[in-house]
Structures are given as C-alpha cells and as structure tokens.
Image 1 (cartoon, helix red, strand yellow):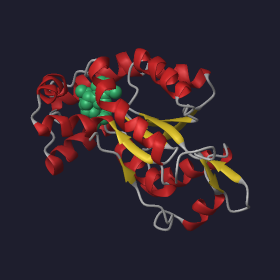
Image 2 (cartoon, rainbow, N blue to C red):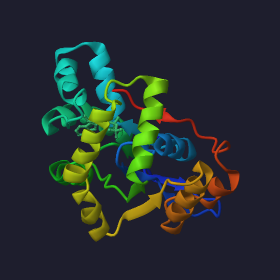
Image 3 (cartoon, rainbow, N blue to C red):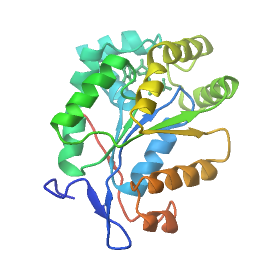
Length: 234
Ligand code: ADP
C-alpha cells in the first residue's frame, strides 16, 4: 500500500474501512511478543519492527554502535534511549511510508521512550491505536526462555541474565501498563494457554475495536493474502 491520504486504512469485508493496526506489544521476556508480533503482521500486512532484532543485527554487524549495544544487551540491561531512537527511528519512518501500520515489538520499554514515541507518532500522524500486554506466570516465562536458549543460543538467555531482565521489566517497563490503560488502549491477554486460543482472543479484541477486518478473522492464520513486511535498519 502506498502512503497517502488513505494510508492507515484497509478495506473491510463489508465495504467499510478498517483502521490499519498500529500496535505496541508490551510484555515481559518470554511472554511471546516475538511470536505473536510475527503472526499479527502476517495477518494484517503491517510492518514488524522488533527492537531486539534490530539491536542484534547491529551487534552482528560489528560496528562501533553494535559494540556499545552489546555491552548492555549481554547483561540484560536496557540500551540507552538515544541509541534506541537512532536505531529504531529509520524503521518506523519506513513503516509509515510503506504500510501505514506497524507492530512495535519490544519498544517502548521506559516511560521516557513511551512519551517520545507518542510525540513521534503524533508528528507522523501514526499514533498507536492499541497496546497488547501479554502475560504469563513468572516460572513459565523462565522455563520458556531456558528452552529457547537450547534452540537459539541467545547470549542473554542464561538464568542469571533472564532473572535480571525480568527485574528490569518490573522496574522500567511495568509502569507503561497503567499509562496505556489510562489512555484506554490497553488489551490484556494471558499467553498461558494454547497459541491458537491466544490468537483467536487477540483477533476478537482487535476486531471489537475496529482494528481488524472480520474477513481476516474468518480466513484464519494462513490465508491473509498479505506478505509480512519486516523492516531492516538499512
Ligand atoms: P526480551 O523481551 O526477551 O528481553 P528482546 O529481543 O525484546 O527480548 O530484547 C533483548 C534486549 O535488547 C533487551 O534485554 C534490552 O537489552 C534490549 N532492548 C530491546 N528493546 C529495547 C528498548 N526498547 N529499550 C532498551 N533496550 C532494549
């Protein structure tokens, strides 16, 4: 879809218009924000912008910036806001231009980031229309991340660093839950159940808010007809 006056609107099955999803995925490590973000972008054609993926790409590039980033991510500390904005802003601008929609996976994570993101969204006429808060019990989060460590070998998926990331979430990111609840855009979902149940619940909640065409719901996960747009910070 080209950006323009209609950017941000997609046709619904009844001939009506459905607002393109512009959502923030907010969840502690291990609650499934990567999985459900990828799935939602396949459903909607919105751009998937994962702060963690963009940071890991920068680290893999071996740039000076990447070395600075790794000194935080390896310990499970948050990367300073200035570096985050430098890395993320180009991806968000590209999303605005190309799709009019986005799934922000892992950003914002602090109140200063949330306030700056709101300003940035307002400037681009692309304010978020929902925040999806995924939850699961803490022992389940830890066991999922330890399983992932065996599969993917991520440097920060060791027990000590996982516990630190959960503490950082509780301290820095949890205040955003009440902030977005107060703005009336928070959707809360437990991921402590089958993935298909989470997806059905998510679709229902987005549809109830006019953010998802009923047709996409009927067709199910493999028939959206939309290609995923994953943005790279190039
Ligand atoms: P998880 O949610 O499992 O911690 P992510 O891939 O989202 O995984 O993030 C990995 C790491 O990248 C975080 O521990 C943090 O160091 C860094 N990071 C990601 N997003 C942000 C952000 N918005 N602000 C600061 N640091 C971030």
